Length: 246
Image: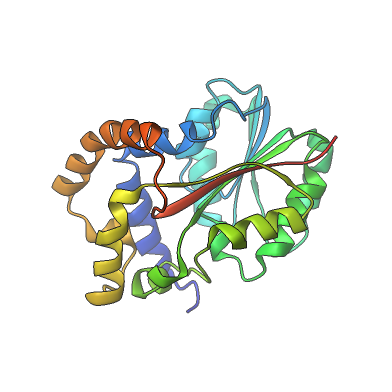
């Protein structure tokens, strides 16, 4: 499946809906604890939801996107903060990202993007090359290949990951694993039903009504506390922190 204008519009609608899940987005970022540095690359910044959080504490944020539409959206959104936020186009399938090696980046945030890349090993090797020694890669990916179905194909996913998959690929790229855990166990069954049984051919967030999005957003703090108290053995996603050796 190719990135057609119709699919781009569907992804834009999905990003708008994710913007309503501020509690969920904050939960994702808290999963990485104190792994954030001061000079951060958000590699696949989307509509800028993550950048909004990162700029509160970082001294510099580089936000890159593949599509021209998202680059323009980011430029408009952060036009008043150009001293600390740099917006740039970047195709992670190529070597454009190597140009950022002189930015002295100590953190790369890469959320729900790796699964979209045909050659994920290339991207991980690029991140390792660009990071300063001791820098960290913070990554979130969809979990469990058995969940792969129509929702993934509609979202242009190439794969879902097992813990072993993600660990092996991070370590092969030269990272030392500091964190690798599951999150969001509650969404696993709905995702399976919609993607494998009902075979909905849309992005997962586009299957939820505004009312359900609001309900889910209100439940997130409770789900986060539950998973902090009892880390789940599986979940819809995996989060990981890989550190580049000094």
